[in-house]
Image (cartoon, rainbow, N blue to C red; front, side, top):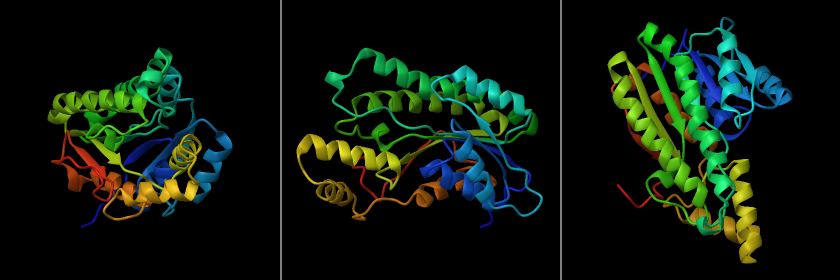
Length: 259
């Protein structure tokens, strides 16, 4: 199977580290023109220099803070590009029991995740409709299927994004545009390191002990590599996935207990 994305323009959010970075690399390897989006320009420049390029690809970046949806949407609009692929991806809210969460934490997470996703989708939709091709892929969490302990705010907002996505998929399928969610399990990223460190502090256990316990929760007995999650995203972005729409795809080594 060839996932040729030549002449496709992809916008990848949160693309300077972790799953976002691996996704940008994977899309570029398949021939896509990649626009990176993140808040630190120095990191964006560094990633641009690393992206695969067959000589005809045009990679670029936009600097934007995902806590300000209007700023992100405006920065993307200024590029003037028609985007065929949108990867919505940004860091998760701080952990902690939901009963201890300040109400402002929900509002902040809702803005950063759902509102930003929504405004970016509205920004790229006219171009996708004109091209008759669109792939909107949201990187969320397995908490959509099974809430995770100690991630109360995240569980709540991720569920909202999943329902937004399913509704969008129902409305856009007629235009050749698919909307799907990839649900990473525990993946070896900076975000996972933060979660492990916080759990170690709260439980008094060592980082190694917490890490091993979390890894053992998966039948694979290990964490995912960012590239393994990115592979699923790149496939969903391709023509090969044209009739896959409105679904949640766990990439967690089998950890999630639900079907």
